[in-house]
Image (cartoon, rainbow, N blue to C red; front, side, top):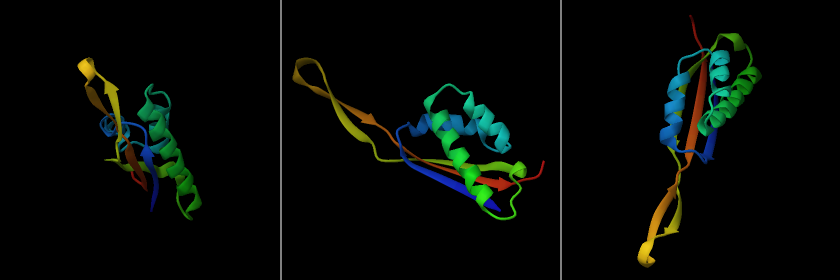
Length: 112
């Protein structure tokens, strides 16, 4: 049995989010939530919220043992980027891309 949660258009860089996601991939859900809670960067906070949502979705399914759930997969895709310009020297403008992410967390029952 699997439980899934999706957060789209999150204002965090996909590259930095994948680094944090790699730290909790394959862990028990309780352990992964504790790691994310005490990781001091923005993608960890966003992943923490999506993980809690997936856990809440799992409790709504019938016949799922919440204590036996593992982080099966975390998919971080790139969303649309916000385009901005910053003034530069001699009347020029530099482009700034504020990147967004689509984050999917899939929890599945696993054995030790």
